[in-house]
Image (cartoon, rainbow, N blue to C red; front, side):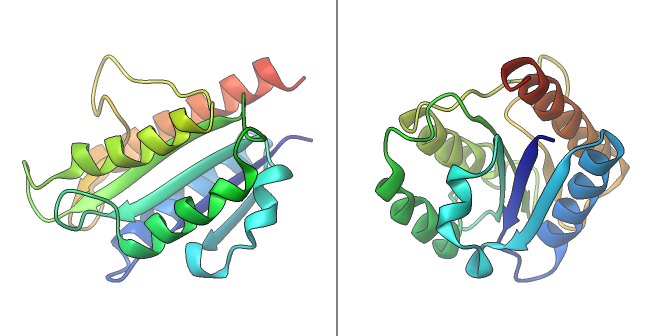
Length: 158
């Protein structure tokens, strides 16, 4: 069975709600899922999973420092995450509050690791962005992300 890591940092609980929703969507699609706060994730799991989904609140238009720390430490596996599937999501406080740049900062790290990502032509192009607590629109985008990740993992890791 394919395995996906959903990891996140959440100070207010908004990103955690999104992570738990994505986890449930992945389970509905028959994926094995590890869903854990980024501070509690053993970095070695990156070698065991087929996909990685990272969630972060938006801080000054970028990812929160615990997420950046996790990504910085992942350099230990540079070249070993090539071809794995990635995705990301965020919560920010307002439209135009830096959500897309936060996602782009995570996406940059995924690309440098050689990971495969999928953008979306409708909705949140880079991944789900909630304005504060996730509303129905953000949750629809979370489900879309989960389904895209599952589809790509199944295509690549039969």
